Image 1: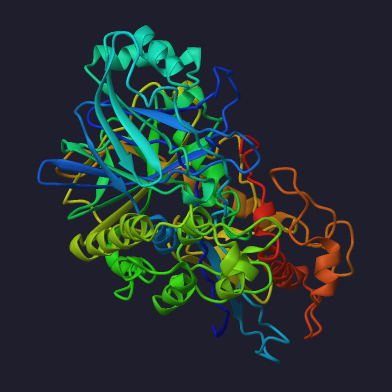
Image 2 (image 1 turned 180 degrees about the horizontal axis):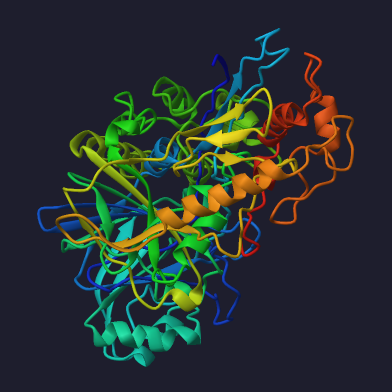
Length: 617
C-alpha cells in the first residue's frame, strides 16, 4: 500500500500567573492585599494559577516564584504572605527563566496527514491534505497592580515579632513569628495589610506546626512595571507548593505548574500521579481541550482531585537559554553616568533597542520599569519621544528621580545577577521535570510535596504527533495517539466523544515511591482499547454522508462534545477549498480530511478562543 505524507506540526507556549511560593514540610503560602488606610478591598491578585520552579541541593531548597498581577484592577497596594518553617533568605529571580522553561516544555498535540495512494494525482491537489499546527496550551498574559507601604515600616504589633527585615528588589520583606493567628492578623492590620478573616484558622494551623511567616509588598516608590520573581532559600530537601492559604483567593480548577531542576525526574510524594487517556484529547483540535482532560483525570476516583500529570521529564538542554543572560550586561557602566547617556549604554548592552514616537523596546521585561522609576518622562511626553532623545529634553529630566549609583545597583540586582544565576542553573543540572494539575479551593487542604526518583523513565509531550490516515474508501482514522487502536472519525468534523458514559479520563493512576517502579492503583488500558474498538465498529457501520453537503456531510452545523460549533464550519470549509475528491469518487471522508485542514488554519488565528470539552474549564 502506497501512502502520501503531508505536513508538520509546531509547538506553542503556555504562560501562567502565580502569586505564592513553597516552603519546607507543609508550610506554604497565600496572598493578601494592603488595604491602605484600613479600608478592606477585594483581592487584586489574579489567583488563577501558580508557576514555580525548584532546585534542591546540599540540604537546601531554592524556590523561584513568579509573581504577577491583575491588569483589570486599580488597587494601589499589593502584598502577600507565606508560611516558612525556618528563617529564609531572599533574592530577585529571573522572569526570563520562567519564559524559557515554559517555551521549552509546553505540551503540544497535533497530527500529520497520510493518504493511501488511490491512483491519479498523489500531490496536494488530489489525495493529499495538510496537517495542523498548534498546542493544547492557551497563552495568558500578566495583569497589573500597584504597591504601597505600611504605617510604621512593619515593626510593631502585639504578640508578633519581626525576626527579619529585608529589601528584595522592588519588594519590602519581613519574616514574622507569632504566638496566635489573632496576633498575626492584628499585626497585619496595624501595618496596613488587609488579611481576609477566612485565613485566620489556616494561619493558626501553620503556627501550630511551628511556622514563621514571610510578608512581602512593593516598596513605597516601586511601580507595577518593577514586579519580578522572588527566590527563597530555606533548609530542607522536600519541595512544597503553597495550597492551603492559596485557597482564600483561588478560583475553581486553578492551574498549578511546577518545574524542577536536578539530577533525576521528580514526582509528587503525597499526591497521586496520573497519565491522561489520549483518546479523550482533541487531536483534531490540537489538544484544545487539554486542561479539561487534565481536570477530569485528576478528579477521577483514586486520584480524588489531588494528583499531577508529568508534562515533561528529560534533559534540561531542551530549554533555550537565549535571553537569560548576556555577557554584555554591565551594571558598573552606569555608576556616575549622566542621565542623557543612559539610552546609549543600554543600547550598547542590548537592554534597549529602538524607540518610536510613543514607546521604546526593551528585551528584558524589567528594564522599562526601572527607566520609569529613575528617568520618568515629563507630563505630556511619550516614553519613546523622551528616552529616544534625552538630549533634546535635558531641561526636563527629573534629577531628583535620577540616581546613577542606585540605578546601577538595581540593574545588577534585578537583571544581571538573576540572569547569570538562571543560566548557571540550566548549565549545572541535567534533568528538568514539569508537573501540572488543576485544583479547586475545596481540594486545597493538603500542601503537595515532591521527591526525586532516579529509576523513572523520561517523558516528552512537547511534540506528540499523531497520523490522520485517509484510506481510499472508508472513514479517516487518527493513528498513533497512544492507545492500541486507531480512532475512526465520524462525519461531525470534531473529535469524537467515544462512549462518554464508559470512557475513563485517566489511562493510569499511581503512586510513586522514592525508589523503584510506580505502584499502579488504576490501569484503564484494556478498557480504553475495548471502548475504542466498539466505537470503530459502530462508525464503520454508519451510513456515509453525501458529498453534496447534505445533512450528514462534514461542514454542516454539527456540534462538538462540548457544545461548540463543528470544526471550521461550512463557511471555513468552502473558503479553504474543502470538498469532494478530484478523482471522481465522491467519498465524503475525503471532504472530512480536507476540512480538518481548514479547521487548523482557522485555529491559528483564534487560539485564545478555544473551548475545553470540560464545561468546568
